[in-house]
Structures are given as C-alpha cells and as structure tokens.
Image (cartoon, rainbow, N blue to C red; front, side, top):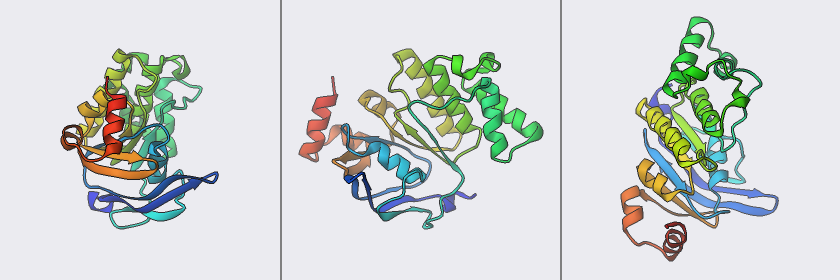
Length: 237
C-alpha cells in the first residue's frame, strides 16, 4: 500500500466514552509521513485510549479516524502493548505464526522471521520458549514480531514502563531501527527523557483533550499552557 493511502493519519473531533467516562473529547490531530510521535500526559489523560482508537481496537463515540482521507483502516499498521502476549512456543515460532496468519509463507516467512529476530538482538534465543524470556527480551520479541509484518505505522503503548534502564535502552534501539527502516512510530511514555530522545513531535493530552501538538523542541523549550507547565514540573526530576 502506498504511503499516500496511509498519511496523513488524522483524528477529527475524536471522542470516546467508556463506562460513562469521557476518555477523549473532540481530539483533532494529524500525523503526516514517517515521523516519531510521542503522546504525553498525566495518568488518565487518555493516552492509551487514543492509541487504541487510532489502531482500531476502540470505536469512537463521535468523530472519525482517517488514513489518507479514508475511513478504511489499513492492514499496514500494528500495535505493541506494555505487556505483550507471548504464545506458548519458541521466540522464532512466535514470529513465524504472526507471518503465517498474515499470509506470508514458505521461504519468505522463515527469512523475515530470522531477519527481524537478529535485528532485535535475539537470534541467539530463537529456540528459547518465549514465555521464559526476560521482560525486556519479550518486549523486543514483540517489536520484532510486529516489525516482521512491515507496518507503515507502529503504535507502542508504554513499551518500556516496567523495564530496567539497560533493557529500556535496548528496546529504544529497536524502536529507532524500525523507524529508520520506514515505519512511523506513535508511542506513549511517562519517561520524559525517553520522549526527548525519540520524539520528532509531541502530542500532549490533558483530561482527554488535546493540549497541543508541536515539535519536541518547542514542547520542551517553550511555555504554552498552565496544564503543560504543571505536567512538566511534576514529571521532570
């Protein structure tokens, strides 16, 4: 699928109500091209709900998500969660399975699976049971599994939240490699240092509403709202 069919990825008047609670309220944003976009905000700001709605796991209560002007959600996108689900099989077989259910077979399936496993730094663990891997290794395996599908957009929900600094650094390395290979990254994090390292753009949510969407440089250097100032003061060490 050509990039023009995917971008811009837009939310127009996007609202989501879950269990009587307004999780997102009239959010408008646009992601154009192969960018690294980090979604920031306090707990309960709607970050995870936004990613799940853009990905298609949650249906909006109002508004719409557009991919290149179309409401048809493309297959060329994937999502990795904070605690990824590992199948009861080897690391390599986890990737093979994902490729199989997406119609990739034969030699290409094996080649892709081994290639992404190696690029995630897990080739030596190919035959290890996925559920026996450490948390950081499982997260890299989840990234490799998604990467094998060659998504044009990859959504990441707090991918390093429960990892130690060394494991988090390895996950960040894989994320940057995936982006360098041509995949747009849209991710949430509570780690402002990580946001500074990764983001081209920041989407800041406050109380389910869009506070601002701006370059990472501007977000961290320019005053704009009391909500953002309070958030940064609370989160920065």
